[in-house]
Image (cartoon, rainbow, N blue to C red):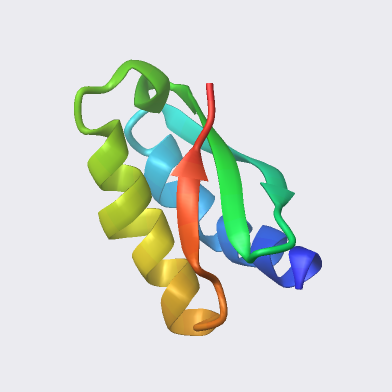
Length: 74
């Protein structure tokens, strides 16, 4: 599952890089929470939480419904 999530993040990454940001996989917890770290412009963006929930989480959960949520860590 972790490798699938990492591969999916690789597909999301170019969209973030277009705006000067990036995303790093941190971990997949036992209770199926994906933790990521936003980087670049995304890290300080006031819309970063929307990016995580409405972008990254939505895309990951569409592919892998067993994922409970996506959280951003500092």
